[in-house]
Length: 437
Image (tube, rainbow, N blue to C red; front, side, top):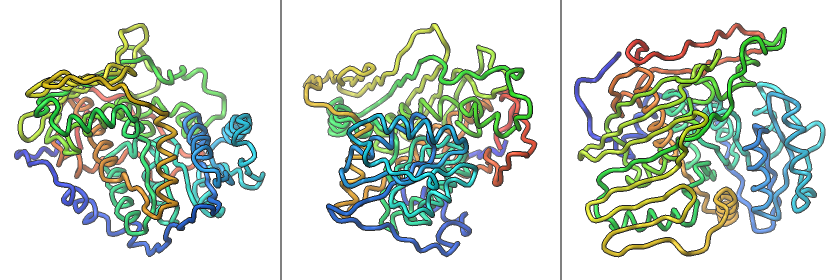
């Protein structure tokens, strides 16, 4: 373990971004890409392309089409052909948008290079919704091509990917590209009001946070004997992507990152200085290599603490809540219930609400039309690294600092993939044995 004996102070926003830029001279800008995102007037037609045609990608495409009457879907891409057809079928069943699903047969792109084919097809906006392991390279390509972007969470599964994302964020700013993150709670109306009040001092100084994401398994891993004859290593892992750390990042990074992001939100997007975590696997996962529970203990420079409890085991107590303890009160969001504050002036949200997933796209397209594109890049990268930091602490059993997480050499995602490649499954981590590198 390449441990740093000193505990550095939290990286400032400027330092956070500069750290990655200095190590990425071969990034998007250095490659000579100069594509600038298209500006669009109120009635200009915007063409969108979907990359990753699973359930979340299909949902994002529908929300994009509902967000703006002058948006049409003209291209889709996935590694599996049936996913393209299933997604388009679902979108066509929505009568409110079916007439704007205009994907010609030669614009249904399949394969590991589908991303580039979608980008080259003439689209103005791309929706990135593949397994998270692909997100850094897809984001880099989309920014290089000058496309506006909806980028699903999380944004990477390893520190190398986060650094790539950070470079793409800076390039997107220069090119005036809209970059909207799939951390959907940031666009939930009740929670926006809740965190505004928290930041305005409704419970005094936030001293501690306890966040939970206790739920059942997302995509259980089938036993190896169910693998079809002749199916290669890569296809087997892609078809069961949630169960492999290089693709999903583990349940903490892929699913519970929403709760990690809310911790980051509460802390004004100032990252912790260190983390310790416990975790492991209780239920057999066949050949998968993700944990089914992780608890992370984050510490901030001033001594404040945040605890993230994540579990994906059936028949257990479920809870997806946020508990904030302040110097002058408490703030609680219990599941999907309205947020509550108990303090000098107690408060419970009673205002209007709306679909946060739809809000993401409504705000993105409005910003494009206005010529003031949203860029969520800085905080979305921090929240992603914060989740990865917690996973690395759990897998290794070591205390991990923010600087170690940001600078470490870990790269889980191969630079090149091929359907016929030999790609052995990495053994599941063992705390105290698995090294932090």
